[in-house]
Length: 541
Image 1 (cartoon, one colour):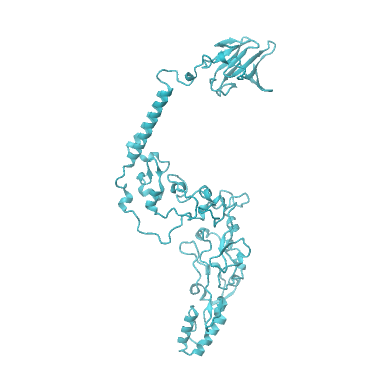
Image 2 (image 1 turned 90 degrees about the vertical axis):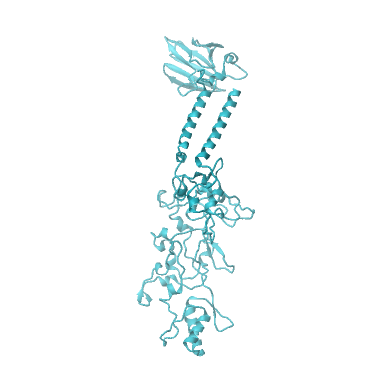
């Protein structure tokens, strides 16, 4: 048995066939002929083939089924019968010589009611959305469900089991007052920054004085959430400002206006450069920036790293770690000093005839005073030793400037201790790599002005997730903003005398209700509001 359905849309006709002994008409998923209209029941009516005839049956629908304007429960259809179901008109096409049954389906237009006035005059639409039992109706069912839900919520609250409503435990940082919900949460307000500042200080939220807007603490630091550290901030929070950076004063920002992804649009790093203006910085991609190290010390890395270098105890082969040692925290390198890194190979000898023939590494004035003492105030010998030192030894590494006095002026070394001011870097985290893997130009550098810190492209070799990476996404190094950047500007001299004592830290604050009472009162107000809303709804309907 085949049912042919011809749906008419203006001048277009959509034809499809459905096989089977019956054709169910309705709004539900089990209907073969489905209409999306609220006046049609899920299984509104059906057509069955019985002894060669086609019988239309109404399935107890609310709006009813009509044939030629007459409401029917069951009727044998004839060719040309006009069936009205909701706003749709179905015209039966029955050919006694064909085993198929065809329906032409039209939408009843307002200008052509097609019997719809009669179709819907007995329809009770309010009853269509009500349960049929006189007592067990939707209002009673809804109130019963609300009461059951309230009981499920109140029972653990009364028992003091507040952690049942937590999506996850608090992080280890807050575990010491895990049971004191009111220390962070305020009824109907949630977590406020004031509660955070009670422990973390008033300067905890400072980022940049020109920032246009300041997010709340809980916006970035999400508690009761399993996964990464509480201090790890999602990149989406950073992009809220840095995707289109603006300042509070309206002046152009000092930093890059748009940064959304380390792999895609992060700008090149900035480094200190030699310039007449102190503190000058430039991007490493700028012309000449990689040859503008502000250090005045004359150093040739290529010579120091060559094989069979002459040392105090014979030939040596120096490596990077012979001079560069990480700080105890593993972040930056300990500053280079003459006593720790240079003196063993470059002693300041001035007179081979003396038993003590090394001067201290100090200012010209102190060197002169030392030599006068050694030579028992013999000015001529002291001046000769000075000339040898300054001309042949000191000038090997230092830049000397003549003065109107006999002693020259030695320019300060100006060796940067930290190259990246706004990014944090840890050598400890990168200790698996050899030094030249990142400092690729060090072994061949001959000039003092060469900037040998790695640029953005070197970091992106590992810290990237683009399609061109040689690492798979699962093995690539992290690229989150918080990997290298801090949001808060920590005070240089923080107040180490905190606001809390041990008792206040471990117990609820005096004068505050217990958390269970807070939650119970909040829930009671919520339930009372729900009941009032239901009463108003019943009065309307």
